[in-house]
Length: 275
Image (cartoon, rainbow, N blue to C red; front, side, top):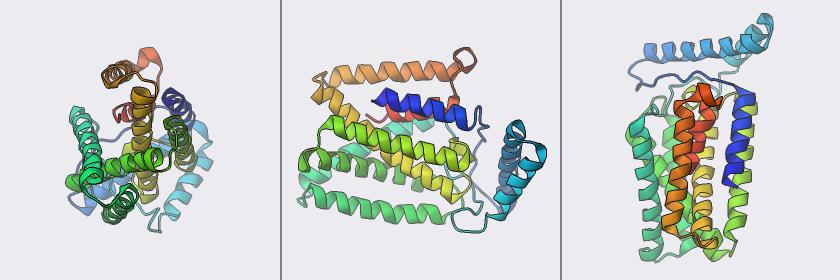
């Protein structure tokens, strides 16, 4: 099921925007820097449009995009996600571990019950997402705090479905796979790209955080399903996912030889580093 989601992602990325330009990220220091980054992103969008549309249609669509950038969701803001480096993946895995451990700690020692704890955590997540959306620049501590909270909330959701509602892990995995695939499809249909460093509107950022939530939920459900439901064991599950991550890493390093979309590789790695 996990590999079905990765396959769908590869198809969507290839159909939506092959080889999307990934812009380097820096924290925003002033308005001039923000304008330069936005203009660079628009230039990349125009270059993409010229590949697939006659010039007059590309200019017209770009003009419409700028003309509509007046609401809270479509106004142009700074790219509020970090640059993808080795440190990004290390911090991401650590945040995942902290989130899952914190979720177990809350349920065990909180004394509020699984459903109540989950509701409270989603309330906290909503508060910090409002702060994140309100900003127009990248703030690393806030970004990674939101990632930890999302990881905690998604773990609690999966545990609630399994322990409180008696939903089988395979059904949870299937449900999150469908939700994640639909979100990727909607994002691509709306924005024509899934590249995280093209997220310079809040609408794209909303798609991004929704994908992150479903990604963590899927990773928790699939990891528990393989290790517990399929009786593979935690040790063998770790080895299985490590091998899958290694394959994705090799595809990322040698994209010309494998013809695999690098954006699809990024999201596949993001899913696989959750369990």
